[in-house]
Each structure stands twice: as structure tokens, then as C-alpha cells.
Image 1: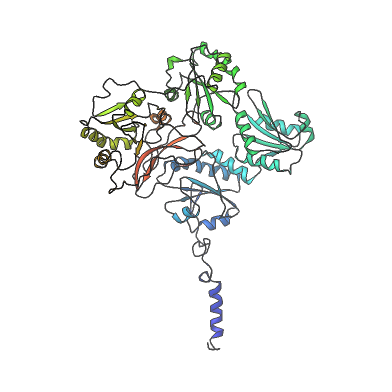
Image 2: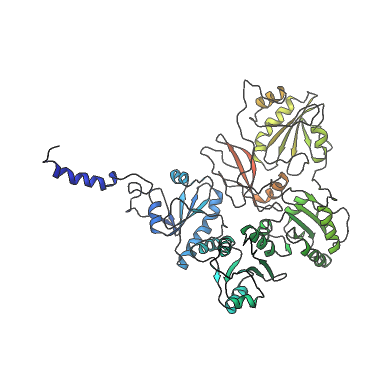
Length: 590
């Protein structure tokens, strides 16, 4: 290279080394995120793209980002609350900003942050792009703000004297105070971690000896103060093992519940979040004095079962028809008791019609736990003409007799009356029955799985097609292929299998979405009780169901999507989770 050219080229080379073209391209490089670009706002919420996320992270030390989809019904329901939360944050001058990202339009960002469901909310602190915290709290504005408040500020109030402690206790229905002799210990960290997410309770902590003495404590203890029942519950810290987060959480959830809770739209979320597997329900008519008098005996039995059984009152005169339907209880049967295990979904009824007293309630609970009472199953009555049509009608009472007839090949459709996909396949099912009506060894049948419970198995999605071949052994095969007449016929003609030369379309069976509790499987009957309340879902998203009773979590109905088409109605145990993203080209829910 000529020496004369060096003075000219050297500045250019240096300029190139420091220019954007000379830098390594990364997610926050100027070429992707021009600093001069202004971030737009809607209703006080930043509207982000891949070009502006980095700028937003640099400018806002606390950033809550909602990844949404325009077609998502849950996102639309969240939108007004999210806007309200933004206004509340602005009014408090809290160092947190709300933002949103259109996930389908910003696929790079959705993939970067592992977004597979909408809405998904992630909280970024101090510009840290790699380790955001996922928001799993409630979706009401005030609760969103409280969740954020406990992250950017203290999650518990430090108490120095009796006046401060008493003021905190008087201000809320549920107040948790940690009494720790050393505020720098690990137990305090555990306590504060729980306080960050227990939004239904207000937390305080202290190390002041006079407060230990005032509340009659001699060692580290977490105390729950409440304005009902016994008024106070103590959780001593194990001196050897320390404070266990799980044990403390269970204690607070259990003791924050009233001994007897009346079921309604306000209390139901807490009932299902209590993590108590057994629920004892007293069905009564609150408008009748004779029924109200039974509450004393019912409540008298409750303390000895605290933590084991949740005592619930259901007013048959109120808007609780869905609960009565779930348990198969008629309003005129009140007063009556039912016990349900929300993990197994097994339901129990008293054998005798004894009056509801503390003694009879206690005896019934013990009888269930000792295996002296068998669970009951719901069933419609067998229609007189159940076998007169090509498609036979099965109910709980005749299912075993028909399905496991060793001389017949029985093909059963388990359906829900409201299921769009069941309705769509009905003509093919009728045509199949018509085609095989003269085959003496073939039965084509259907069963309304929302009104009939089976001891043999539980249906988890609609429609579900099961084949019960002739012969001994009570064999069952689930059909998972196309639902057209030709393919269904090939399946029957081939003895319950599709010919090997024409392998079945690989459709996944109806399955649960999200993260259900261990062992928790929603039954078709549970789903049925709320479908009448659900109404129509948002196009392209999911049906939104009301809170499902006596299963321990919220249920929603989603569409199972396979190969770009919606193929099944699937119950969804949300437990705080969100609906899945519908792939491009999927058929919208109807």
C-alpha cells in the first residue's frame, strides 16, 4: 500500500471500526434499535417492537411487558385493566412502566422470550434483557399494581412499636407479621419471598423485643391476624429446620379461609385456591329460618377438620344452579350434604337422611374417609327408545351392559351438546350408523359425557371416539384419525384398526393444556356445569368459562389445534396459566 494513501485511509478505517457497520450485530445494536426512534404510546402503555425494546429497557428501570395477540379473547379482557394499571402507576409515580408487544407481528421477540401463550407478561428490571420475571399474578388493575409495588419496594412493612403494629392489624382483614430476632437471617428472606406474591394479605415484620412481649411470643413466629373466627393463628419457626416456604404458604392459605365459607362469585376463587382436597357442601335455602338454624351445627363440626376439609354453604335459592347440576342435587332436596374430593372428583352423599347437626356432619366425614360410603355417579335415565335409531343412545346406567357386550363391536362417540366439533361430525356419525345398521355384531352409539359419569374412565375432550371390540377382556381402543365416513368405515371393516397401507393421520388426542395440579384431571361432567354460562368465545381464541366448582382450579375451554385445524374441545386447568397461541391458518373457535 502506498505511503501516500495511509494518511487518507487510516481515518476512514478507524471511522469504520467505530461505526455501526464495524460493530458486532446484537439484539441491542443501533442498526436494529435506532435511538432516535420515538416509542409510541396507547392509553399510557408503550407499544414496542424489536427496534424499540432495547431503548425501552435502557430508559425504564422497571418494565412490565405484555405479549398479546389481536385475536386473543383473554388479551382483550385484560386490555382495560392493563390501561387502568398504567394510570395507577403514573399517579403513584412508581418507577415502573407498562408496555405491550404484538406477539404474532413481532415473532422475533416472541421467540426470544419463549412466548407460546397469550397473554404472557414479563417484568424486566434495570435493563436486564436475559432474565425477566414472568408475571403470574391476577389480571385486575389494582392487583397488578400491588404485584409490582412489592417488587420495586419492600414486600413487608417494618414495625418498630405497638402503635405501628396495631395500626397495620386494624387496617386489613388479613395481616401477617413475622417476629424475627434477627432480621438478617435466612428465615426473613423466606418470609419476604412469600410476601411478594401473597397479594391477598398485608405483611409486616419486626425484631423489637417489646413487640414479642406484647403479643406473648418468646421465639421466632409468623402470626396471622384476621377479623373472623379465632382472630389469630401462630406458625412457630422450627429452630432446627428454619422457615419452610411451602409449609408457611399452606398454613396461611388454610387459616386465611373462614371455617365456613358461603359459595358465591366473590368467594369461589379463594375456595378453589385453598389447596384443600376435600370440600363438604351444605345445600340449604337461606331464605328459610329453619335452614339457617342448621349453620350453627355445621360450623361447630368444622374446626376439627381444618386443613383436611373445606366447609362450604351453597344457597339453593341463589344463582347456584350450576353447582346443583354438578352434584345432581335438586333444590327441593335441601337441606342436604355432599362431599367431593377435588383431586379424584369423586362425590359422596350421606346414606341416611339424618338432620344436619355437628354430630351427623362429623360422622359423615369420618364415614367417607374410612371407606364406609361409596362415591356416586351421575346418569340420565335410559330412554325407552335408546336402541330404536341407527345411532344408539347410551347413558351411565346402560353403558357397561352395551359397551362391554362380548358379542358386539361397539363404537361410541362421547360428546358435549354445546361442542361445535361434535356437531360438525354428527352427519358422518349418523351416516356410519345407517351404513352398519344391518350388521348384527356392530353397534354405533353416542353418550352425552356432560350428563353421565362413568366409573370405567373419564372423558377429557370432545368428541372422543372409543371402540370396544367383541370378545372377552373388556378391551378399549381410542380412535384418533379423520372423522369422515370413509375413514371411519375402514376402521370398522378392519376390526378396529386402519389398514397399514393407509396409515392414519397423526392427530394428537384431546389433551390438557397448561400445568395442572399433580393428579388433577377435569372430568367432562365438571366442564358441563359451566358451559351454559360460558356463551360464545372470541373468534380465533378460546371459550371463556366461569370458575369451575370443586376441582381446585379455574377451567377454560380451548380448541385443540392440529395441522392448522381445530379438531377438539379441550378442558383446560389454567392454574394461572394462559391460552395457547393459535397457529396461523387455524380454524377459529365458533
